[in-house]
Image (cartoon, rainbow, N blue to C red; front, side, top):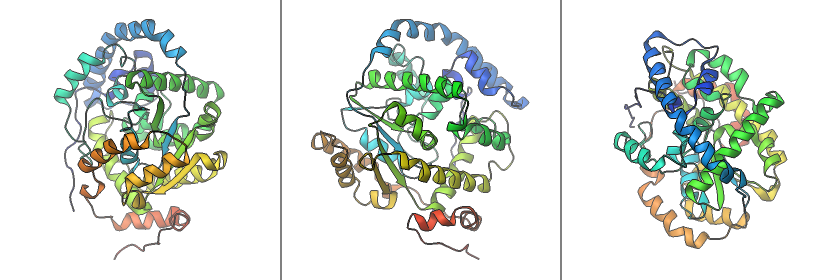
Length: 374
């Protein structure tokens, strides 16, 4: 068993890449602990300085962003957090034809097209070589999930829990279920999301956008409305493992992101309920996906032969270029094989809570129920 005790601790928030008005929308209604006021103030100051650069990018790139047309339907990697989405997404992005969100765009979505060169070089100097919580390699050009970037563009997101863990329940109820938001708010999110995607395509020079975002489980209908021919890859993993892993992940990230401190962090029961709601949402929403446009795979099967599974995905979705991409996928795998990842003990409470909230999901996905160890 191994663990990662390092945490991200920066003097500013990830919201530093947002704009002032959106920062105030993100924090509106939530109490900030006194100990974090300096972090918020510094974030606002730096974000204010960037406002002129944000404006410059909007003016210079507006026409180019709006005129971008996708020649191929996008691919959305969806799955509950800690289910193998990072490995799957990263390998898909080894294809030179893939367009994707980079880590730099994830932090600075408003500056990625005009300020990326000098800022990336500067940020890479202080960036850890590996993610502290799971040892995946890090670089400002590496593929990244979308949600932190989206929250810097539009405030409605369950990721507000990383800033306000004491208000998890309120954020969960108001921000998780995207399709329940008022039409005006959903449309605003959609505009910002299309801007994010188009910038990612321009930035990486890709022909087919490849997305990774667990939150998109709750946006499947919206994504299909925008992209009727979109392809979806759902990857799932042993429920006991993912609930334990997400609980550890969230509480290792919180010290570096929080603007209020919750003693003990977010509780396992809250994570177990999130798992239940997410998988229930997916099981219902997948009925909207054309069978030929959906590929489902367990992480346990994927890690046995990831390259061959990717071949199957390319074949099912009629994506060309697998043989060209294969050597790069294999090279990535050699340096990031899942068998080299750390393992950890699943606590008895996790078994108990998963059995309480998601026993039907455990068996429905083909896993065996496990009683809590005594």
